[in-house]
Amino acid sequence: MSEFSTSTAVHRIDATHWDAPVAPGWDIAGNANGGYLLALAARGMAEASGRPDPVTITAHYLSPAQEGPAVLDAAVVRSGKRFATVSASLTAGDRRLLQVLGTFGDLSVSGDGPERVEAAPPDLPVPDDCVPRRADEGLVLPFLDRVELRLHPDDARFQQGEPSGEPRVRGWFRLRHGEQLDTLALLVAIDAFPPTAFNARLPVAWTPTVELTAHVRARPAPGWLACAFTTRFVTGGFLEEDGEVWDATGRLVAQSRQLALVPRG
Amino acid sequence: MSEFSTSTAVHRIDATHWDAPVAPGWDIAGNANGGYLLALAARGMAEASGRPDPVTITAHYLSPAQEGPAVLDAAVVRSGKRFATVSASLTAGDRRLLQVLGTFGDLSVSGDGPERVEAAPPDLPVPDDCVPRRADEGLVLPFLDRVELRLHPDDARFQQGEPSGEPRVRGWFRLRHGEQLDTLALLVAIDAFPPTAFNARLPVAWTPTVELTAHVRARPAPGWLACAFTTRFVTGGFLEEDGEVWDATGRLVAQSRQLALVPRG
Image (cartoon, rainbow over all chains, first blue to last red; front, side, top):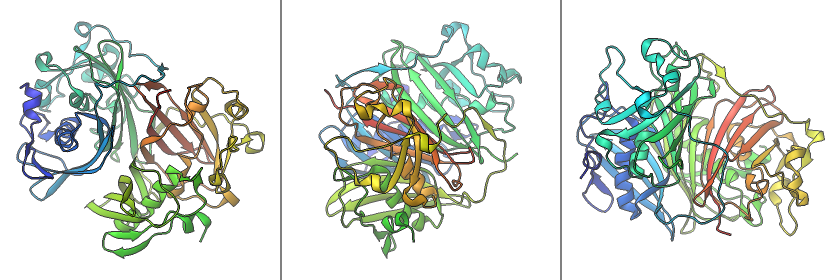
């Protein structure tokens, strides 16, 4: 088993419950990464549904999560020929961590309908010419030992206190040691990058996620993922962050959108 | 009570159940509009949460719905100072129609944080210079007696069999008789327009929604809503449709994204 599989392993307790411990080392300053938590929940939901791949999945983040025991409660609300829909919650003790709703299917069976793509992967220098994500001063990011992030040089200067001014972050993603990525690992990729707010010169230290939705279009080919995240609307105390994830063959494998809070300055 | 309020009225049965009948007249060729169904569910979820406004809400569409009795099962999974999160399902007889997950709050209390908008309302001629949506030949759309849609002339020619070739639909929305819009009515607006596929020259008659997510940023001012829907990725048998809804003061009031099926030709 790979490190990612081990870290998201779940063990069935009964028809609707799974032990789903929050593994060590996936945290940012003590709180488990939201994409990792979603992948952990999705692992159990996929098992409940009998389908390997999340097609569309939404998580509402209710409480920060720390390493330790957690229980997934997952109920299949509809099971059809092609898809199954699962409602689930992840709880640690009496604290609800996240509530999730997902539809699962089998993306190894590819659709043969019309194809039309009006966009292209982000224009990124090769990974070796990009800038590794490093922890901000005073911040401990064990998560960066689990994933590798290489930022577009134009989007990375916020690390030296020089945000680009554009609410955009582009870069490469892979799991450490180049572990093969499945569709659950894509759920980590969509929430692994620093917030677009860091480049937007917004006076905020963090933009906590209220809700995150991912559409998974295909299983990724081996190799780095090219990712791009942008924000167009910072209004009313909220911002959205839209993500695109492309695999090494230049195929869109996932889209994401999250709603995050912009804490009042 | 307005027609929309009456059509989305719910009546509490017990702590977690509401009578939520699917009202007549909101259907397209017999099946209730997806945005209307979401608004109906959201009405009960708002009541369950004690908060008036959906902030982010996701529905997975499980079965087509017809006019008639239905029951909403809504459970508050977390209630905090600012938001409450509700998981719900709408069921008719033994058929699950939709599964919904939403976080609710009070958008009359506006955030006073930083604001930044990188987009503008769609460039639409005034409503009288736009083209009313009319039912396609052979299709009965009672829904069009509930809402008024005025399409951008460039995006309306699919109605004469001349799609623009661009996967885009822009237009004005209001409820019939200019009824005042609340944040629940925004959930109708985001799913009221003809599919972008109709302009994309895709060989499909319909693109059924798998999942629809809306972010509501603000309560709309009185008047028409300016709406724009676009699709960038038709791949693997799926497409996304991204929506923006702006009110008469030029403020973004909602964003939406849905994942729809592209039936194989």
